[in-house]
Length: 306
Image (cartoon, rainbow, N blue to C red; front, side, top):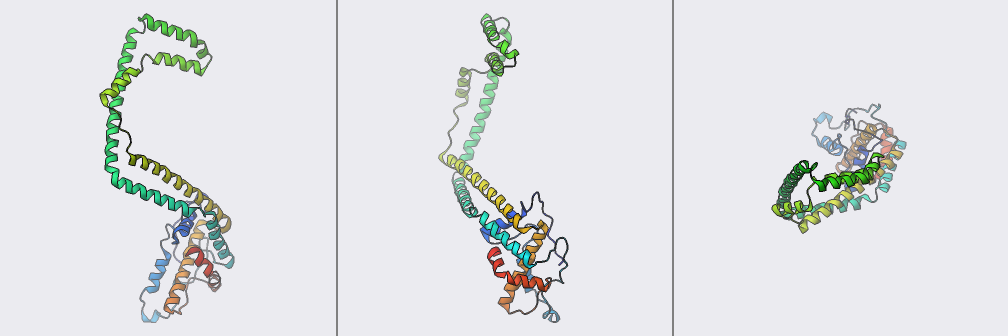
């Protein structure tokens, strides 16, 4: 067999490709591996292809398969493991369809809300952004003014000197010992003369204006975003459990499993074509032992793969 799937990025056995493959199988019943394409479609195209009369009675498919590190024989035992892997994945992923349904519902509701209120929400966000800039500039201006005032009177204002002296008497010893609480209190006294006061904050907000509250639709969208994130994480956790369950059953490398699944689907497509078209031509690319094993597991594979 000449076709080869691309190499998958693989950190632990089947944690990426197997997750994607089995997840799609369980939820949509249309298995397809990234990098492999749709072997069912390819096989149908090949079967439907018009050939010259001398070849019409020949076998369907490529030449006899050559087994190697990537293409492994589809033995009875190996097919048993593949079927068992699908069953293990299905068992581990029992909660996945419900999570997907909740995710889709939340995303649909969010989309409808955004379509209806998105422009108004974005306008509010722009207004809040402008207010944030106004607040920032106002606070910075107040701090610069306070800092300048502090530097001018730090060594001359008796009240300020007395305040710092009391703070030093209360906290210097603790700060020298490395007491973080004493250090924080001492710093707070020093910064209180340079940071904007409550009166400064009030003046800034009066100048800039109040921050507009969130719209009801905006609040609902925020709640839906949390729901979407939660269901996405639930699905991810289930997928990891499915991958672990699959790996225990398969005992195959990723590229071996990918190629095995492609060949299985080619066989299943040929069987479907044959039953609908009364085609008696044999299928190339499989040993007789493989064809016998595939025939034996056909119904189980159909039930697992679709």
